[in-house]
Image (cartoon, rainbow, N blue to C red; front, side, top):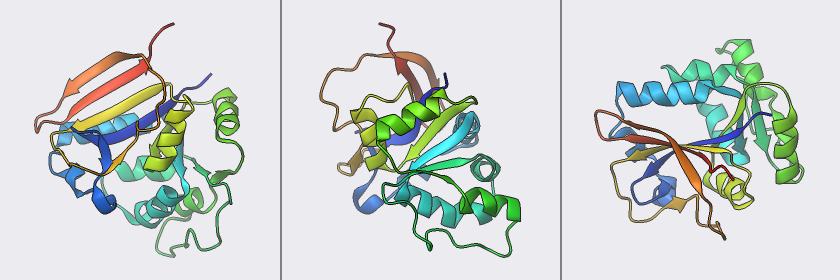
Length: 198
């Protein structure tokens, strides 16, 4: 059975996005090694999972993006969690983009049912792991319902003071096991946690 992995950048004080959805802080301490780790984490996916708003933002950006993340984000299939489905204008075809790349974004799998049931179906399917990227509300729901098998968190050396947390809806103690810890040159530290063995 494949795992559900949450892959997120996080501030030292526990926020995945600053006030007003600001994310520029993520790039302040980024370096080649931390980027390579993030790309390798994303590349482990058999499918990228995301909420509706994150999907819309990513679909507008990644098809024309350059850099090491672009091939991973464009080639791997997507599943969008959207109770009301996708609207016709959520993704706009770009004529100057490889049709295969656009197909990946124009025709994602759309999950409209109960979150736990949809995740259970995905986990039962063959293939590589499911990597969830966001947004914060979607990941909060995954965590709240205890659906996450592994957390791949890049902790950045910055305190935001306020913003969007992902663990704020946990209502009972969750024991996790640290399975990887890696420090990068500019201060980002990768923490990989799995469910503690029971």
